[in-house]
Image 1 (cartoon, chains in turn purple, yellow):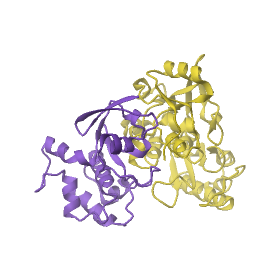
Image 2: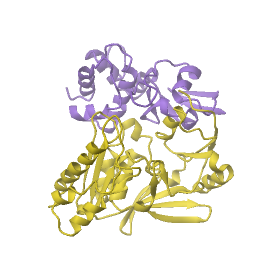
Image 3: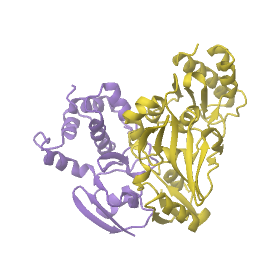
Image 4: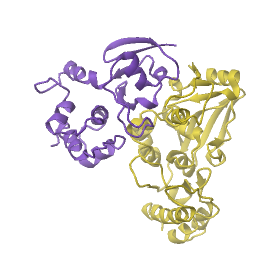
Length: 162
Length: 272
């Protein structure tokens, strides 16, 4: 069936099977491969994207459920910050991306797109979190390198708390 | 993992969902947030021929307080229950428990009606609704009916909901007394190995993952009502339960947990 959605500010229409997962749709039909597939069971958060501004695990959303929605993936995050004037640094990135770079909040990098998307959604809901709240807020995102320390540091830094 | 193929229908209203259920019968499943159903479909534990998407029915997403109860539309998301001032004021236990479900991304999708219809004995919110003495409003082809939460759950993933019925609203009595909720697990975002909800100063005590449904700890409730201490009542919490056994815990361990967590919950709620 025909599924239309706005992905990173661009209108995307594709003929998809109803059983197509949003993450497969984003990667294979829209062609944006920054969103990773990790566990494929809604545990690890590697596939986190924003659906109408809120973090979701795109392995557990059907593309048809996201029809007529706004999707932001890691590729479109910097542009949202540039549009609202919050982009910073030499790369003109989203503050969370800049904080991840400054705090070296990644090791292998596989969880990073999902971490960044989950963290930006979390800060929208809780702009001034404690470190413990950051850890709770990111409980749905796993880093198999166990690099949580710098990830939490980056989120605190992006929130202006460190 | 990809689900088996199905037809996708969008219901714009509860009436339309009921009509579609009537048309497709047992072949169809209602799809709300999908965070229980879609994983089951990916594992091929469920393979409905038709999915009826009810998450777009905006009429079923609301939180209102009136006539001594909180009325929450079935498609209200966990995040909305968790962050609602109205819920915080009138049924704070429900807001607290909503915030314990899964993780934020799950709570952005999961719905109160969905978790009740799924009837997982390991889920937190059904047990909270049970302890709080909630009522579930279901609509079918012959209109609406009210189902007390303690008559709703019938077995593993089973409820009294008929194949052509849809949950439209959940009602929670307001102004109930002291409460506490104990969720015991070992890892982030896991289900409760055992959970205990104490509502209304101990008048409602419910257990998570202590049988095939969320269940009331009636022996403990009755002991408290007859003047037993929190510790003595808690010792009866697992009476009549048939706890499951899995890699997390055997039945004896769950039985022990139920009594310990009930005592902790009663004490934390200030029940002497």
